[in-house]
Image (cartoon, rainbow, N blue to C red; front, side, top):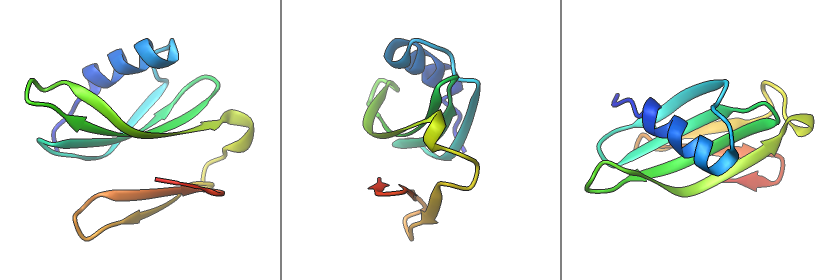
Length: 93
């Protein structure tokens, strides 16, 4: 699995104003990176696409405030393509 940790940290600082407390890459290759980010005020699940320059572009994200999230509240389903589908309450990506 390809790691994009440094680029993910930069994206998170630019978009959420903080460095993630935890980064879990759930899927990554030369074209995509799917990550779970734990922030001080919640969690963010992000589907990134990787452009030709190796930059991350947020394709989709799901933000869950800390008061609505707890470990186990996110259901995941791995697709036949090796990607992961996420669901939290009524939100899905």
